[in-house]
Length: 231
Image 1 (tube, rainbow, N blue to C red):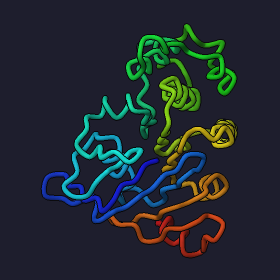
Image 2: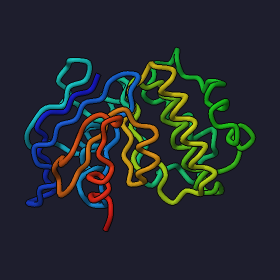
Image 3: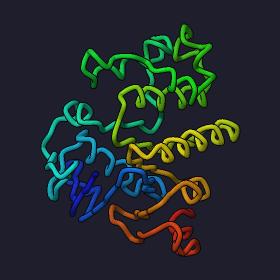
Image 4: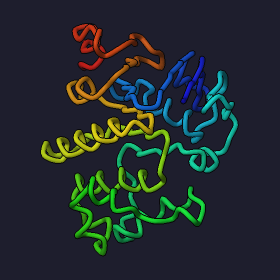
């Protein structure tokens, strides 16, 4: 479904990614692990087109999208839940959800009941402003907004960051359901090792802008992976 090959990415003279490759397949969860500042979010910026790459290719369903605009990638089914949630604090919950319509043709612009089945807490908050929600509720709203786009690839960038344990469990359950439905690929960027290990099918560990370890989660060497997550 998605294949990024030999990606180099720079911020000015500073290299954030060095020859990084990544693949994500429908019905699977690919986990990207690593400490803060090692290039995980930069890789997601490259995949979504928010930052231009210096070298390499990003392919989506066998089409080269390396130079395609972010909005056009979204219209092709790539949805991104950014680190820090980035919901619109002055808009209501329903208005936030409807911003996901921008990637859809008019005939598909509907907030489906399945969104509220996944996130029941949002059903009774549709008229509340996003800024009045708790951090955990905002994270659920951010994921729900991405799902309104009816994506084929869902990218979750640090969804457990700053979230209380009960909401982390809810988000875990939602991601499990999405994988079981089998109609989208999921990339999960995480520092929370157990959360990623329990959900993932494949994994890549990053350090200083490169992939150091990767493979199937079932054959993961936990000791090897954890040393790249500790400070």
